[in-house]
Image 1 (cartoon, rainbow, N blue to C red):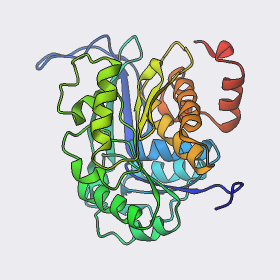
Image 2 (tube, helix red, strand yellow):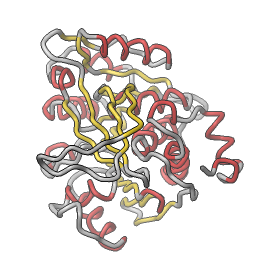
Image 3 (cartoon, rainbow, N blue to C red):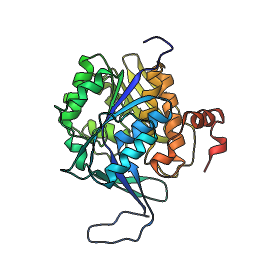
Image 4 (cartoon, rainbow, N blue to C red):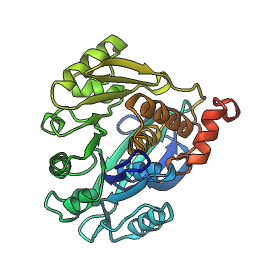
Length: 318
């Protein structure tokens, strides 16, 4: 690949329907609360990241599995309309399309429950995995599919010399077997704590984040990128550590921020940007996304992101 060529991005991951409702707090067991603002739309970390990358100009292929139901039909229409290659997308009549229930509070913070459904039907021996990896330069995965499928995907990817980005979400504390195949690990702060065996509710400072990331480096990844929301991101690798800032915005819905970040990171790396520049660009993409409502409508196009960066967020405050 020459300096002017773009690498091809493969996203192996999930598609879920997002069911979103606003609530001032979550109910306790046995309690019913009245919410408002219900919306239904496409989601799932894999699909979101594929669309995020495609909107920013990436050449993207998505491998996943959806049900033979109306939600699966919706998935195909949406991904095709976003110019995502779905040549290897599978369908099944043995499970329903995955679904995510998203609860938003007045601060734009979210809690999410996912039923993976058809996503778990993508199995490690599926021939679409090695075939699609052969055509890719960067492979981006998450943790909403069968863990054995994820491991096989990144193992093959490393063997073939691909750049592997693992976004360890939803968080799991026992993914050590995956880390030796990973080039870049992208946890948020809660996921970082869970990877370290800590409770996600506890507070840790940036120095502790650095120490945990350094420990994770010893397990295989070349770089750890910890996303820190409004505080930007932390890069930790063999050269040391560096904090990258994020623009200040007033968030409306934080649901897609991590997916936007990871999709943008993959695009920046496919364009051979250095890691610090790639992370900075991805921070802007994440910030743009949280000022909108719903995930897919809030993911920026290349033109929108460039204007957002040029204007230093001034015109985009909610």
